[in-house]
Amino acid sequence: MENVTKKFQFGEFFFFTFPITLQMLLRNIVGITDNFMVGSLGPKYMAGLKIANSYFFFFLILLWAFSNAGGIISSQLWGKKDHDGFNKSCGATISVSMIAGIILSLIIFFASSLLARIMIDDEEVVKYVADYLRIISVSFIFTSFNIAIATVFSSSGDTKTPFIQQAVTTILNFILNYLLIFGAFGFPRLTVVGAAISTLISVSTGSIVLVFLAISKGKMPSLIYLIKPEIKVIKEMLHLGLPMLGDMFFWQFAMMVYLKFIGMAGADAVAIYGVVGIFISVLYLSISGFVSGTGIIVGQLIGGGLKGKAYKFSKSALFYSILISLIPSILLILFSGIIKIEPYYITIKSVTINVSKILDIPSWFRLSGVIGDSATICLIILAFRQAFTTISGMVGSTIRAGKDALFVLYISLFGFFLVGLPLTTIAGPVFNLGIVGIFIAISIEDIAKAITFLIRFRSKSWLFKSDIKAITE
Image 1 (cartoon, rainbow, N blue to C red):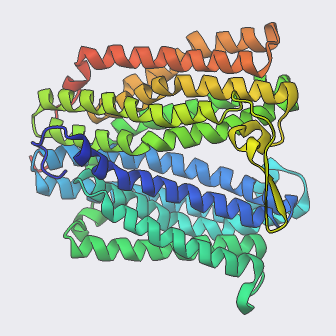
Image 2: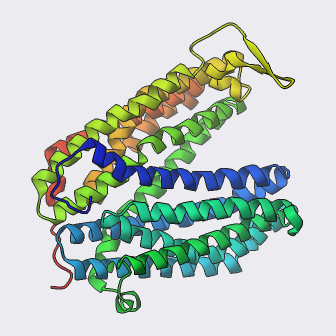
Image 3: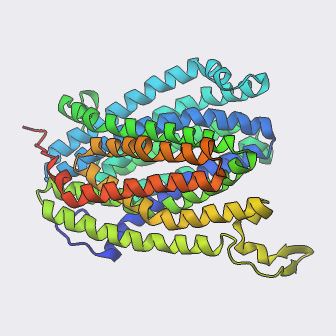
């Protein structure tokens, strides 16, 4: 996919984006194994990890915004065949990310206890959080480098190299987690601290792998561009990155408001929403590679002056991504519990398994009766809205590639204040329609945003927001 003059071919596009999907899957696996292993030690250990990771997630949002902004600029310069400008852009992306990583690392290292006490009063949990944050804060420096250098590869059309780094990091993290959390094979039993150390070692090792691969493939920016980043690029990164950052923070705020309304409906409603949230992540993962890959290629095409081809490519990518999203959506409906079958048991080595529950996701989480039925309805709604979620993700990535990032923020504001907030208020506090009513209201917001995105996409105005010039000029 480094040749930006190629027409859309689904097979080629799929294999280009598949490493991105795998990379995101591996990142999720790291989080799942951390939670599973630490959670098995007890609720206070788990609480400590959850609180610490909330700060880490804030850090990732910041990095995501500015590294994506740098990626948009870099992909356009790559498509323009301005290789010196591309190197300057990549150098600035790495520098800005590293500076952000160092600043946040220092803040969290020295304020770890204070940050823990902001979230909880339990002194035992505070200790776990503080110990974890002090160690994990050092990994922020390596994480910021990894995300930035991965942008260098991806924006030039190389999606395989970042996947290799993530595979190494994930495997090493899993092994070290087992050794250091539980004290296996003679290693010290360090519990939460062990999880932090394993993350630090695996992430720093991933940085070494990326540096080696970047140098061997000629993708490492010149040292001068790292030490003295181009001011033009930094200004452009801020111009693009701040709306993205605002969009992410506002999305988080909206989710907190909706969670508050759901909490008012009771603990059962929160439990159902927690189950649905798992499958929201799973469904997004199925099209995540398409979302990121489309943004990369469209950016290259726009940078190369091929705006007509960029529109046709993104239109084809959108069509096929919607088709692909139907597969997990149909599976979700089949497994939602809507199909009721008689109990059927099999016994394997003295272990009896109720096979009939396989097609009943709510039963996996011990949700039954009216609660299980509500969960089934929400899962079916989620499956039907997935096509609209796919549209929002794909078109959002596409128009960002055309430097129309501010409009994405406007759509988030429009969706929340004019649709989501009024409808969830009516469904929740006003008429007490429960989790199903609130979830329908949230889904209507997603549909409204998808329609607005499509109108913007078809207008083609986003193609002319970008007026990229060679950084060398």
